[in-house]
Length: 203
Image 1 (tube, one colour):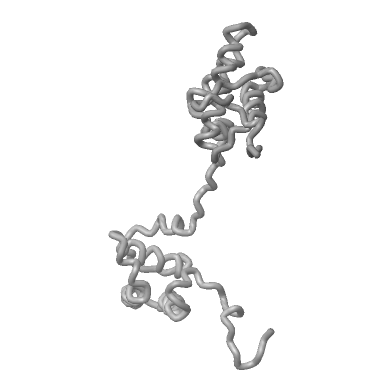
Image 2 (cartoon, rainbow, N blue to C red):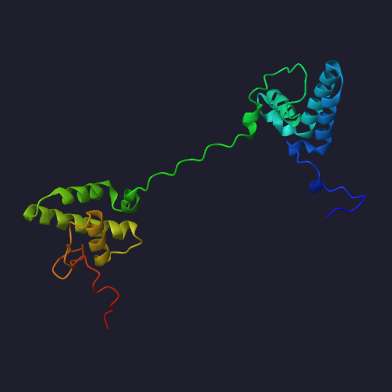
């Protein structure tokens, strides 16, 4: 919408460096239009002083003078013909967006952290072991330790089905325990390490 007598910023040309304001941008454009190099040089040095005052936080950088001249170069749209006191050939890098970071590959082990490194290694060993008494014993030891780890790191949860499901998942289905026959070790109070009867209160 154009209303006679009103000048909206949205109707103006976009500024290269908005932090310095439109007045400084106009000064830069005027400096570009000056007829002699000496006049353009003096104008540029004056504008640099104004830019420093306009954006004082730039002084926090050790090479802030380089930054100011880079900004001036960009604001002039590379058209200011002066003797640049700094190399402004890399000024365009200021507006260069960083390359997107690559997403890390999904790490399945992050779901096993509450079991710890030892149990994670047991999963791998169980997948490679042949059937037999030795593997059965390692399954028993691993399952019991998994249950203790769940009690410690899983907010007190010691669900038998959780142990069985995780054991099957992390061994790629090689190890399947039958909860109707599998017995967990007893706890310190002589009760089986099973929560099949948890939640029931003595009357």
